[in-house]
Amino acid sequence: MKRKLVVPLTLAAAAACLFFFQIEMASSQWGSGSFNASDPGVRGGPAGAGGQLAGLSGTQAAFFTAGAVDFAEEEKVPDGLGPRMNLDSCGGCHIQPALGGTSPFVNPQVAFAGKDGGTDRVPTFIAANGPVREARFVLNPDGTADGGVHALFTITGRTGANTCTLAQPDFATQLANHNVIFRIPTPTFGAGLIEQIPDAALLANRTSNTFQKQSLGIRGKPNFHVAGRTITGMTNNNGNDGTIARFGWKAQNKSLLLFSGEAYNVEMGITNELFQTERDETASCQFKTVPNDVTNLDATTPIQVLSAIENFSNFMRFLAAPTPSPDTPGGASSIANGRGLFTSTGCALCHTPSFTTSKSTVVALSMQPVNLFSDLLVHTTWATGWRTGSARARRVRESSAAPRFGAWGSGYSSCTTDAPRTWCGRFASIQAPAPRRTA
Image (cartoon, rainbow, N blue to C red; front, side, top):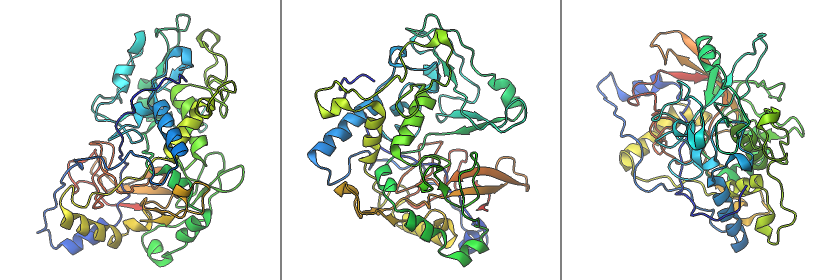
């Protein structure tokens, strides 16, 4: 990746939808239908996130800034972009409401389809006013499990890729076969704090409040990573050393460095020292040696030595957690009421309000509170007809209880959680979501 300095983008956050259990319980507290809830909308005002951790040394702050530059930079074919990819920068996906967050209000994937001469079509599930998405196929043609990312775009027609001719996946057929699932960008605010939470704390929290969890159907047994499968409500253990993984929608990545290396290869098609093999090895579409991005052993300064994935991980590791707003949206009283309901209805049993980090080599990360509103476990959620209005329960595949911190919505892909509330972009108000429960 090029090492030129640019002005870092504005910084901020967003998050995905809460697993909102036992809405019936909350309804009984509100009365016999006389209470008319209304959603105050997405949090406005200053982002309250995107800056560096308090207490970093001067050197650590310099590495944070260098990492932010790399995180925001747009890649080109000569940098190793492709041959297949979903976008050309980390910051393009993680920018709402600031660098390190989630999908922006305007989806950059629409314009990217034709960027630099690209000839790709925009898939029907990608919209300018919708979230950034990656697509995965559920099954292979032979009926075996797939689950892998099928990149939306190619480098065909783009500057520097004259000899490359690739076809996009046949998304229309896969959609017709109900064989496509999606994921959106996870915000990375406070990721370094999450990385420092000890496994013992996660395991102790998993076994706490047993009676309440069982009464709400939150159950499971120790989960070990076996061929991509997980057991509901449990830790996703790293297959190499057995410790708990925690990054990504499936909590599949153990560390921020691994998270960075996988995303660089899968989302941008850029090979690196962790993922050294091109996902598409078509000979006529290779325009840079492999791995595309490596440690610069000939550099003359420490910052110049680091590879892109080390820069990405330093940026996320030193990125501060968001600061909750005391009064926006809805006012301080509404936020206080929402916080109480968040606990009384059972949300906090999966979205654990807080942990504490272990003793860290980085002083700014050592013995710090992590108000993430997540247990970092993997859950299966059940929805009662939330798409169709039917009474038939639907199983939603296992996913991690995404950290909420004190964050806010992006307008379609996230939820306001200062209250905390249950507003997601697919709904017009907090009254719309049907009851959900984890199993």
